[in-house]
Each structure stands twice: as structure tokens, then as C-alpha cells.
Image (tube, rainbow, N blue to C red):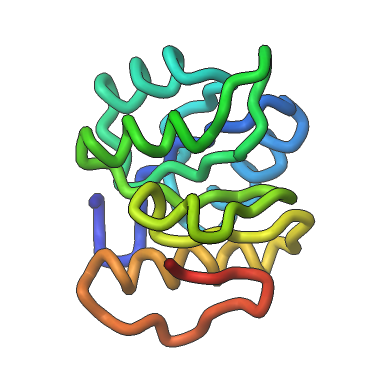
Length: 136
């Protein structure tokens, strides 16, 4: 991590406009978006090259790929994941991601979710957990 508040974030999302909106929100609150990926191979290449602190992963990706598979591989490579999806997996997501943020979400909710994940990664109980987010 760059500083106590800044996180390097990979966005795995197949809708370009959604990915750009997420990027704008995260950068406005001081995080660094290291890139976008809409499939597993691109996500893994970016993660290997740029070493994110966390990946925000949608569940349903382009060409029928699954964010569950992406999260499983990223997690095995040491990248923490948070699902950001309208279709949050229940128990199937346990062990693949730290939690899930339900779409649609507001700027404030996204920022709070990333802060909660930063707390978890730092070994702390989150100060605030948005109502549209759950941890596994």
C-alpha cells in the first residue's frame, strides 16, 4: 500500500462505463486504480504486473466468464478481492473474496466499502460497514 489511507485497486468489470465511474469515485477519495479488466486473463496480467492491494470483481463478466473464477485465482496469488455485483454469491463466495458490495451503490457506499476492506486487511474490525455490503 502507498500510505495508510491509499489503496491500489484493480477493477474487474465488463461494462466500461461502470468501470470508469468506479475509477472516478475511488480516485476522488485518494485511491489509485491500477487498471480495468473485463476477463480473467487481463485481470491476472494486470495483477501480476501492478500488484494491487485489492480487486473489485463483478460476478458476471464478458463472454460468459465468471468473477468467481477470477477471484479464486487472484486470491491464490495473494490479491484480496471484494465482489461488486448485482448478483452477490452467498456461501459460494466464502474463501474467494472478503465480502460483497451489492450493486447499485452510491459514491459514499463504495468509498465506505473500500475503507472497510482496508480495515480488514489491516487486522481491524471495520469502523463502518455499509448496509449494502456483507463480509464473509
